[in-house]
Image (cartoon, rainbow, N blue to C red):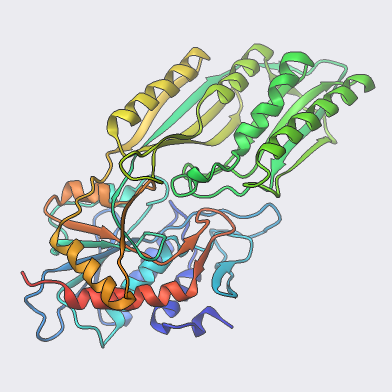
Length: 487
Protein backbone atom coordinates (compact mmCIF):
# COMPACT_ATOMS: atom_id res chain seq x y z
CA UNK A 1 0.00 0.00 0.00
CA UNK A 2 1.24 3.47 -0.92
CA UNK A 3 1.07 6.20 1.68
CA UNK A 4 -1.16 8.07 -0.80
CA UNK A 5 -3.86 5.45 -0.14
CA UNK A 6 -4.00 6.16 3.58
CA UNK A 7 -6.77 8.13 5.28
CA UNK A 8 -7.23 11.02 5.50
CA UNK A 9 -6.10 11.16 1.87
CA UNK A 10 -6.02 14.97 1.83
CA UNK A 11 -3.27 14.92 4.47
CA UNK A 12 -1.33 11.90 3.22
CA UNK A 13 -1.30 13.09 -0.39
CA UNK A 14 0.20 16.39 0.71
CA UNK A 15 2.76 14.58 2.83
CA UNK A 16 3.61 12.31 -0.12
CA UNK A 17 4.21 15.41 -2.23
CA UNK A 18 6.69 16.70 0.32
CA UNK A 19 8.56 13.36 0.39
CA UNK A 20 9.22 13.82 -3.35
CA UNK A 21 11.07 17.09 -2.78
CA UNK A 22 14.63 17.12 -1.32
CA UNK A 23 14.51 19.46 1.70
CA UNK A 24 17.41 19.05 4.12
CA UNK A 25 18.13 22.05 6.31
CA UNK A 26 20.09 24.80 4.55
CA UNK A 27 18.92 23.42 1.17
CA UNK A 28 15.27 24.50 1.01
CA UNK A 29 15.15 26.19 -2.42
CA UNK A 30 13.33 23.26 -4.06
CA UNK A 31 10.69 22.94 -1.38
CA UNK A 32 10.16 26.72 -1.31
CA UNK A 33 9.46 26.63 -5.05
CA UNK A 34 7.22 23.60 -4.56
CA UNK A 35 5.12 25.36 -1.92
CA UNK A 36 4.77 28.51 -4.01
CA UNK A 37 3.65 26.44 -6.99
CA UNK A 38 1.27 24.44 -4.77
CA UNK A 39 -0.44 27.67 -3.70
CA UNK A 40 -0.86 28.85 -7.30
CA UNK A 41 -2.27 25.49 -8.41
CA UNK A 42 -4.80 25.45 -5.56
CA UNK A 43 -5.83 29.08 -5.93
CA UNK A 44 -4.54 30.04 -2.48
CA UNK A 45 -2.82 33.34 -1.75
CA UNK A 46 0.86 32.57 -1.14
CA UNK A 47 4.09 34.55 -0.93
CA UNK A 48 7.67 34.24 0.21
CA UNK A 49 8.74 36.74 2.84
CA UNK A 50 11.97 38.70 2.61
CA UNK A 51 14.04 35.80 3.95
CA UNK A 52 12.48 32.57 2.66
CA UNK A 53 9.53 31.72 4.87
CA UNK A 54 6.42 30.75 2.90
CA UNK A 55 3.09 32.25 3.98
CA UNK A 56 -0.38 31.23 2.77
CA UNK A 57 -3.65 33.05 3.44
CA UNK A 58 -7.20 31.74 3.18
CA UNK A 59 -10.31 33.72 3.96
CA UNK A 60 -12.98 32.71 6.44
CA UNK A 61 -15.82 30.43 5.41
CA UNK A 62 -19.22 32.18 5.26
CA UNK A 63 -20.54 32.93 8.74
CA UNK A 64 -17.10 32.72 10.37
CA UNK A 65 -15.71 36.08 9.29
CA UNK A 66 -15.75 37.43 12.86
CA UNK A 67 -13.62 34.65 14.33
CA UNK A 68 -10.12 35.32 15.60
CA UNK A 69 -7.41 34.71 13.03
CA UNK A 70 -5.41 31.49 13.31
CA UNK A 71 -1.86 30.82 12.10
CA UNK A 72 -1.03 27.16 11.47
CA UNK A 73 2.73 26.79 11.58
CA UNK A 74 5.33 24.18 10.67
CA UNK A 75 8.80 24.04 9.15
CA UNK A 76 9.74 22.90 5.65
CA UNK A 77 13.17 21.42 6.33
CA UNK A 78 14.03 17.94 7.59
CA UNK A 79 16.98 16.27 9.29
CA UNK A 80 19.09 14.31 6.75
CA UNK A 81 20.19 11.18 8.60
CA UNK A 82 20.76 7.74 7.09
CA UNK A 83 22.28 4.40 7.99
CA UNK A 84 25.83 3.56 6.98
CA UNK A 85 24.68 1.20 4.22
CA UNK A 86 22.30 3.69 2.58
CA UNK A 87 23.31 5.40 -0.67
CA UNK A 88 20.53 7.99 -0.39
CA UNK A 89 21.43 11.50 -1.60
CA UNK A 90 19.35 13.98 0.40
CA UNK A 91 20.05 16.75 -2.11
CA UNK A 92 18.63 14.78 -5.06
CA UNK A 93 16.61 11.74 -4.03
CA UNK A 94 12.99 11.56 -2.83
CA UNK A 95 12.33 9.90 0.52
CA UNK A 96 11.28 6.26 0.09
CA UNK A 97 8.38 6.27 2.56
CA UNK A 98 6.36 3.12 3.07
CA UNK A 99 3.69 1.59 5.30
CA UNK A 100 5.00 -0.68 8.04
CA UNK A 101 2.01 -2.03 9.93
CA UNK A 102 0.53 0.80 12.00
CA UNK A 103 3.33 3.18 11.02
CA UNK A 104 4.82 5.04 8.09
CA UNK A 105 8.59 4.96 8.00
CA UNK A 106 11.41 5.28 5.43
CA UNK A 107 14.04 3.04 3.91
CA UNK A 108 17.15 3.55 6.08
CA UNK A 109 16.73 7.34 6.24
CA UNK A 110 14.88 9.89 8.28
CA UNK A 111 11.26 10.11 7.15
CA UNK A 112 10.70 13.86 7.37
CA UNK A 113 7.42 13.51 9.27
CA UNK A 114 9.19 16.02 11.49
CA UNK A 115 7.78 18.39 10.32
CA UNK A 116 6.34 17.27 6.98
CA UNK A 117 3.18 15.89 8.58
CA UNK A 118 2.49 19.24 10.26
CA UNK A 119 3.02 21.11 6.99
CA UNK A 120 0.80 18.59 5.19
CA UNK A 121 -2.01 19.28 7.67
CA UNK A 122 -1.66 23.00 7.08
CA UNK A 123 -1.86 22.47 3.31
CA UNK A 124 -4.86 20.18 3.79
CA UNK A 125 -6.71 22.96 5.64
CA UNK A 126 -5.97 25.33 2.77
CA UNK A 127 -7.12 22.77 0.20
CA UNK A 128 -10.22 21.58 2.03
CA UNK A 129 -13.69 22.78 1.03
CA UNK A 130 -15.64 21.34 3.97
CA UNK A 131 -14.04 22.88 7.09
CA UNK A 132 -15.68 25.78 8.88
CA UNK A 133 -13.07 28.27 10.04
CA UNK A 134 -12.24 31.92 10.46
CA UNK A 135 -9.31 33.62 8.68
CA UNK A 136 -6.40 31.18 8.37
CA UNK A 137 -2.74 31.72 7.63
CA UNK A 138 -0.23 28.92 7.18
CA UNK A 139 3.36 29.83 8.00
CA UNK A 140 6.05 27.41 6.78
CA UNK A 141 9.46 28.39 8.13
CA UNK A 142 12.85 27.31 6.84
CA UNK A 143 15.99 26.01 8.52
CA UNK A 144 14.31 25.11 11.80
CA UNK A 145 16.50 22.10 12.47
CA UNK A 146 19.90 23.79 12.34
CA UNK A 147 19.19 27.13 13.97
CA UNK A 148 15.51 28.13 13.71
CA UNK A 149 16.68 30.70 11.16
CA UNK A 150 13.27 31.20 9.56
CA UNK A 151 11.64 31.92 12.90
CA UNK A 152 14.50 34.23 13.85
CA UNK A 153 14.14 36.17 10.61
CA UNK A 154 10.35 36.51 10.74
CA UNK A 155 9.40 40.17 10.96
CA UNK A 156 6.72 41.58 13.25
CA UNK A 157 3.53 42.66 11.50
CA UNK A 158 3.73 40.22 8.57
CA UNK A 159 1.14 37.85 10.04
CA UNK A 160 -2.40 39.05 10.80
CA UNK A 161 -3.75 36.32 13.09
CA UNK A 162 -3.46 36.31 16.87
CA UNK A 163 -3.59 32.57 17.64
CA UNK A 164 -0.65 30.36 16.67
CA UNK A 165 -1.16 26.59 16.44
CA UNK A 166 2.25 25.03 15.97
CA UNK A 167 1.97 21.58 14.34
CA UNK A 168 5.41 20.32 15.34
CA UNK A 169 4.65 18.32 18.49
CA UNK A 170 5.25 14.58 18.42
CA UNK A 171 2.87 12.95 20.90
CA UNK A 172 -0.84 12.68 20.18
CA UNK A 173 -3.06 13.78 23.02
CA UNK A 174 -0.62 16.32 24.45
CA UNK A 175 -1.12 20.06 24.37
CA UNK A 176 2.28 21.66 24.50
CA UNK A 177 2.31 25.14 26.03
CA UNK A 178 6.04 25.65 26.67
CA UNK A 179 9.51 24.58 25.54
CA UNK A 180 13.16 24.79 26.45
CA UNK A 181 15.55 27.46 25.25
CA UNK A 182 18.76 26.53 23.49
CA UNK A 183 22.38 27.54 22.99
CA UNK A 184 25.06 26.21 20.64
CA UNK A 185 28.62 25.88 21.89
CA UNK A 186 31.71 25.23 19.78
CA UNK A 187 35.17 24.37 21.08
CA UNK A 188 38.07 24.55 18.66
CA UNK A 189 41.42 22.88 19.40
CA UNK A 190 44.45 23.89 17.39
CA UNK A 191 47.21 21.32 17.06
CA UNK A 192 50.52 20.79 15.36
CA UNK A 193 50.77 17.72 13.20
CA UNK A 194 53.72 15.35 13.46
CA UNK A 195 55.13 13.03 10.83
CA UNK A 196 54.37 9.35 11.44
CA UNK A 197 57.54 7.64 12.64
CA UNK A 198 58.79 4.22 11.59
CA UNK A 199 57.39 1.24 13.42
CA UNK A 200 53.71 2.28 13.50
CA UNK A 201 50.67 0.91 11.72
CA UNK A 202 47.34 2.63 11.09
CA UNK A 203 44.05 1.34 12.50
CA UNK A 204 40.50 2.67 12.32
CA UNK A 205 38.22 2.44 15.35
CA UNK A 206 34.51 2.66 14.54
CA UNK A 207 31.52 2.55 16.88
CA UNK A 208 28.11 2.44 15.22
CA UNK A 209 24.61 0.96 15.42
CA UNK A 210 23.51 3.24 18.26
CA UNK A 211 19.90 4.40 18.49
CA UNK A 212 20.72 8.10 18.25
CA UNK A 213 17.59 10.24 18.16
CA UNK A 214 16.38 13.76 18.88
CA UNK A 215 18.65 15.57 21.31
CA UNK A 216 15.66 17.15 23.03
CA UNK A 217 12.91 14.55 22.94
CA UNK A 218 15.13 11.48 23.36
CA UNK A 219 17.91 12.75 25.63
CA UNK A 220 16.07 11.46 28.72
CA UNK A 221 16.19 7.92 27.32
CA UNK A 222 19.88 7.86 28.30
CA UNK A 223 21.06 6.41 25.02
CA UNK A 224 24.75 6.09 24.30
CA UNK A 225 26.57 8.94 22.57
CA UNK A 226 28.98 7.64 19.92
CA UNK A 227 31.45 10.50 20.49
CA UNK A 228 31.60 9.67 24.19
CA UNK A 229 31.98 5.96 23.50
CA UNK A 230 34.96 6.45 21.18
CA UNK A 231 36.55 8.87 23.66
CA UNK A 232 36.31 6.27 26.42
CA UNK A 233 38.01 3.67 24.26
CA UNK A 234 40.74 6.07 23.16
CA UNK A 235 41.82 7.41 26.55
CA UNK A 236 43.65 4.32 27.91
CA UNK A 237 45.22 3.72 24.50
CA UNK A 238 46.75 7.19 24.47
CA UNK A 239 47.67 7.21 28.16
CA UNK A 240 49.07 3.70 28.57
CA UNK A 241 49.85 2.12 25.20
CA UNK A 242 51.66 4.79 23.20
CA UNK A 243 48.89 5.04 20.60
CA UNK A 244 48.84 8.20 18.51
CA UNK A 245 45.64 9.91 17.33
CA UNK A 246 45.33 10.81 13.65
CA UNK A 247 41.72 11.97 13.53
CA UNK A 248 38.38 11.83 15.33
CA UNK A 249 35.06 12.30 13.53
CA UNK A 250 31.57 11.64 14.87
CA UNK A 251 28.00 12.85 14.57
CA UNK A 252 26.57 15.04 11.86
CA UNK A 253 23.80 17.24 13.27
CA UNK A 254 23.70 19.57 16.27
CA UNK A 255 20.27 18.36 17.38
CA UNK A 256 20.74 14.63 16.87
CA UNK A 257 22.36 12.26 19.36
CA UNK A 258 25.34 10.86 17.42
CA UNK A 259 24.88 7.20 16.53
CA UNK A 260 28.27 6.66 14.86
CA UNK A 261 31.82 7.90 15.39
CA UNK A 262 35.29 6.86 14.30
CA UNK A 263 38.91 7.55 15.11
CA UNK A 264 42.05 6.78 13.11
CA UNK A 265 45.05 5.89 15.25
CA UNK A 266 48.66 4.75 14.98
CA UNK A 267 49.74 1.62 16.87
CA UNK A 268 53.29 0.46 17.68
CA UNK A 269 53.68 -2.26 15.08
CA UNK A 270 55.22 -4.99 17.24
CA UNK A 271 52.79 -7.92 17.33
CA UNK A 272 52.74 -8.04 21.11
CA UNK A 273 51.74 -4.37 21.24
CA UNK A 274 48.99 -4.76 18.66
CA UNK A 275 47.51 -7.74 20.49
CA UNK A 276 47.55 -5.93 23.83
CA UNK A 277 45.91 -2.84 22.30
CA UNK A 278 43.22 -4.90 20.60
CA UNK A 279 42.48 -6.64 23.89
CA UNK A 280 42.17 -3.27 25.64
CA UNK A 281 39.83 -1.96 22.91
CA UNK A 282 37.65 -5.06 23.22
CA UNK A 283 37.59 -4.75 27.01
CA UNK A 284 36.58 -1.06 26.91
CA UNK A 285 33.87 -1.64 24.33
CA UNK A 286 32.46 -4.63 26.20
CA UNK A 287 32.02 -2.45 29.28
CA UNK A 288 30.26 0.29 27.29
CA UNK A 289 27.99 -2.19 25.51
CA UNK A 290 27.04 -3.78 28.84
CA UNK A 291 26.16 -0.38 30.31
CA UNK A 292 23.93 0.51 27.35
CA UNK A 293 22.64 -2.96 26.59
CA UNK A 294 19.00 -1.98 27.00
CA UNK A 295 19.04 1.40 25.27
CA UNK A 296 21.47 0.48 22.46
CA UNK A 297 21.38 -3.30 21.95
CA UNK A 298 22.65 -3.09 18.36
CA UNK A 299 25.81 -1.16 19.17
CA UNK A 300 28.84 -2.64 17.36
CA UNK A 301 32.53 -1.83 17.19
CA UNK A 302 35.24 -2.51 14.62
CA UNK A 303 38.98 -2.02 15.00
CA UNK A 304 40.75 -2.82 11.77
CA UNK A 305 44.05 -2.13 10.06
CA UNK A 306 43.99 0.41 7.24
CA UNK A 307 45.53 -0.41 3.89
CA UNK A 308 47.43 2.85 3.74
CA UNK A 309 49.45 4.28 6.60
CA UNK A 310 48.54 7.76 7.82
CA UNK A 311 51.27 10.26 7.06
CA UNK A 312 50.75 12.55 10.05
CA UNK A 313 49.16 12.51 13.47
CA UNK A 314 48.03 14.95 16.16
CA UNK A 315 50.89 15.68 18.53
CA UNK A 316 50.52 13.50 21.63
CA UNK A 317 50.08 16.30 24.21
CA UNK A 318 47.33 17.89 22.09
CA UNK A 319 45.63 14.55 21.47
CA UNK A 320 45.52 13.82 25.19
CA UNK A 321 44.08 17.25 25.98
CA UNK A 322 41.38 16.78 23.33
CA UNK A 323 40.31 13.29 24.39
CA UNK A 324 40.37 14.16 28.09
CA UNK A 325 38.18 17.21 27.40
CA UNK A 326 35.74 15.12 25.36
CA UNK A 327 35.38 12.77 28.30
CA UNK A 328 35.18 15.53 30.91
CA UNK A 329 32.61 17.66 29.11
CA UNK A 330 29.07 16.83 30.25
CA UNK A 331 26.66 15.31 27.75
CA UNK A 332 23.16 14.07 28.48
CA UNK A 333 20.56 15.00 31.08
CA UNK A 334 21.83 17.53 33.63
CA UNK A 335 18.63 18.02 35.63
CA UNK A 336 15.02 16.84 35.50
CA UNK A 337 12.20 19.27 36.17
CA UNK A 338 10.71 19.35 39.64
CA UNK A 339 7.74 21.41 38.47
CA UNK A 340 6.71 18.97 35.73
CA UNK A 341 7.68 15.37 36.62
CA UNK A 342 9.15 13.43 33.72
CA UNK A 343 10.26 16.55 31.85
CA UNK A 344 13.95 17.20 31.26
CA UNK A 345 14.84 20.66 32.49
CA UNK A 346 18.46 21.01 31.37
CA UNK A 347 20.61 18.91 29.03
CA UNK A 348 23.52 19.00 26.61
CA UNK A 349 24.26 16.89 23.56
CA UNK A 350 27.88 16.52 22.38
CA UNK A 351 26.71 16.33 18.80
CA UNK A 352 29.65 16.64 16.44
CA UNK A 353 33.41 16.12 16.54
CA UNK A 354 35.35 17.04 13.40
CA UNK A 355 39.04 16.86 12.49
CA UNK A 356 40.44 19.15 9.82
CA UNK A 357 44.12 19.98 9.18
CA UNK A 358 45.37 21.67 12.34
CA UNK A 359 42.02 21.65 14.14
CA UNK A 360 39.64 19.43 16.08
CA UNK A 361 36.26 21.10 16.62
CA UNK A 362 33.50 20.00 18.99
CA UNK A 363 29.90 21.20 18.61
CA UNK A 364 27.34 20.74 21.38
CA UNK A 365 23.75 21.90 21.85
CA UNK A 366 22.51 22.90 25.29
CA UNK A 367 18.84 23.10 26.21
CA UNK A 368 17.10 24.36 29.33
CA UNK A 369 13.73 25.66 30.42
CA UNK A 370 15.59 27.89 32.92
CA UNK A 371 17.82 30.58 31.44
CA UNK A 372 20.07 30.77 34.52
CA UNK A 373 20.61 27.00 34.43
CA UNK A 374 21.50 27.22 30.76
CA UNK A 375 23.99 29.96 31.56
CA UNK A 376 25.56 27.93 34.36
CA UNK A 377 25.93 24.93 32.07
CA UNK A 378 27.51 27.16 29.41
CA UNK A 379 30.11 28.31 31.95
CA UNK A 380 30.77 24.71 32.98
CA UNK A 381 31.36 23.60 29.39
CA UNK A 382 33.46 26.67 28.63
CA UNK A 383 35.71 26.03 31.63
CA UNK A 384 36.28 22.38 30.67
CA UNK A 385 37.34 23.22 27.15
CA UNK A 386 39.33 26.35 28.00
CA UNK A 387 41.29 24.44 30.63
CA UNK A 388 42.13 21.98 27.86
CA UNK A 389 43.36 24.80 25.62
CA UNK A 390 40.40 25.20 23.25
CA UNK A 391 38.83 28.41 22.02
CA UNK A 392 35.13 28.42 22.93
CA UNK A 393 32.30 30.31 21.23
CA UNK A 394 28.53 30.44 21.63
CA UNK A 395 25.81 31.07 19.06
CA UNK A 396 22.10 30.68 18.38
CA UNK A 397 20.92 31.35 21.91
CA UNK A 398 17.23 31.76 22.60
CA UNK A 399 15.05 31.76 25.69
CA UNK A 400 12.40 29.21 26.42
CA UNK A 401 8.66 29.56 25.85
CA UNK A 402 7.14 30.12 29.28
CA UNK A 403 3.94 28.10 29.81
CA UNK A 404 0.63 29.94 30.26
CA UNK A 405 -2.00 27.45 31.34
CA UNK A 406 -5.34 29.24 31.71
CA UNK A 407 -5.87 31.05 28.39
CA UNK A 408 -9.01 31.19 26.22
CA UNK A 409 -7.38 29.16 23.45
CA UNK A 410 -6.07 26.51 25.84
CA UNK A 411 -9.64 26.09 27.09
CA UNK A 412 -10.91 25.71 23.52
CA UNK A 413 -8.22 23.13 22.77
CA UNK A 414 -9.08 21.15 25.87
CA UNK A 415 -12.84 21.24 25.25
CA UNK A 416 -12.46 20.14 21.63
CA UNK A 417 -10.20 17.30 22.62
CA UNK A 418 -12.73 16.04 25.14
CA UNK A 419 -15.42 16.22 22.48
CA UNK A 420 -13.40 14.35 19.82
CA UNK A 421 -11.55 11.85 22.02
CA UNK A 422 -13.88 11.45 24.97
CA UNK A 423 -11.09 12.02 27.48
CA UNK A 424 -9.01 14.84 28.93
CA UNK A 425 -6.01 16.22 27.11
CA UNK A 426 -2.64 16.35 28.81
CA UNK A 427 -1.07 19.81 29.15
CA UNK A 428 2.72 19.69 29.03
CA UNK A 429 5.91 21.42 28.03
CA UNK A 430 8.69 19.93 25.91
CA UNK A 431 12.45 19.80 26.25
CA UNK A 432 12.70 20.09 22.49
CA UNK A 433 13.05 23.49 20.90
CA UNK A 434 9.95 24.92 19.26
CA UNK A 435 9.83 28.00 17.10
CA UNK A 436 7.06 29.35 19.33
CA UNK A 437 9.73 30.56 21.75
CA UNK A 438 11.30 32.79 19.11
CA UNK A 439 8.19 33.94 17.27
CA UNK A 440 6.31 34.69 20.48
CA UNK A 441 8.90 37.33 21.30
CA UNK A 442 8.09 39.07 18.00
CA UNK A 443 4.32 38.71 18.44
CA UNK A 444 3.83 39.01 22.22
CA UNK A 445 0.03 39.22 21.96
CA UNK A 446 -0.26 35.78 20.38
CA UNK A 447 -1.83 32.88 22.20
CA UNK A 448 0.31 29.86 21.30
CA UNK A 449 -0.15 26.10 21.51
CA UNK A 450 1.49 23.12 19.85
CA UNK A 451 -0.04 19.78 18.84
CA UNK A 452 0.81 16.87 16.55
CA UNK A 453 0.42 13.15 15.87
CA UNK A 454 2.68 10.51 17.40
CA UNK A 455 6.15 10.48 15.85
CA UNK A 456 8.84 8.15 17.15
CA UNK A 457 12.62 8.47 16.85
CA UNK A 458 12.77 11.77 14.91
CA UNK A 459 16.21 12.80 13.65
CA UNK A 460 17.21 9.14 13.20
CA UNK A 461 16.80 6.55 10.42
CA UNK A 462 14.23 4.82 12.66
CA UNK A 463 11.84 7.80 12.43
CA UNK A 464 8.18 6.76 12.06
CA UNK A 465 4.74 8.32 12.36
CA UNK A 466 1.65 6.52 13.62
CA UNK A 467 -1.00 6.33 10.91
CA UNK A 468 -4.09 6.31 13.13
CA UNK A 469 -2.81 9.24 15.18
CA UNK A 470 -2.53 11.34 12.02
CA UNK A 471 -6.22 10.73 11.28
CA UNK A 472 -7.33 11.54 14.80
CA UNK A 473 -5.16 14.65 15.00
CA UNK A 474 -6.65 15.83 11.71
CA UNK A 475 -10.20 15.44 13.02
CA UNK A 476 -9.20 17.26 16.19
CA UNK A 477 -7.62 20.15 14.25
CA UNK A 478 -10.80 20.57 12.19
CA UNK A 479 -12.89 20.71 15.38
CA UNK A 480 -10.55 23.31 16.89
CA UNK A 481 -10.72 25.56 13.82
CA UNK A 482 -14.51 25.49 13.92
CA UNK A 483 -14.52 26.35 17.64
CA UNK A 484 -12.13 29.32 17.55
CA UNK A 485 -13.82 32.15 19.47
CA UNK A 486 -15.00 35.42 18.01
CA UNK A 487 -12.85 38.53 18.09
